[in-house]
Length: 121
Image (cartoon, rainbow, N blue to C red; front, side, top):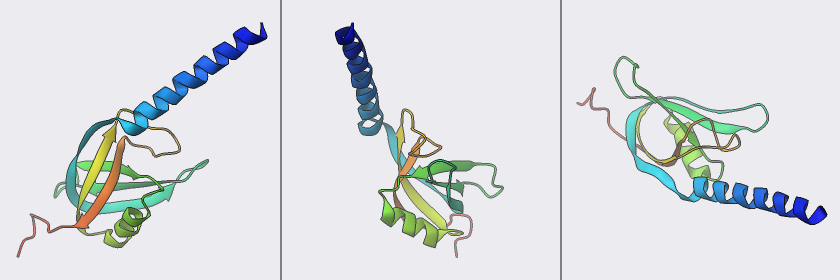
């Protein structure tokens, strides 16, 4: 009886580890998005995650929500500095997420200042 229980628990643990590895290492898509960085904050009750939004249109009707992993300290500092400016973000979209990673499936890997196409001089 004990052996059977250990095999079942070991199998469940192995499946969870495979699922976690799949979500972490296999991206669904990669790309870039540009827009005005309108929000960037650290939020959460149990675990705090970095969440943000960019507006991709003049009216603000097209909002792109994203998360930043805690291990990307440089990106967090850049986004805090760039808030209110037009930015270009490189992201990785994952199949799913975990509550301790963030609220969205889009994770920012790089951020840079850009020039708005709406207000060029």
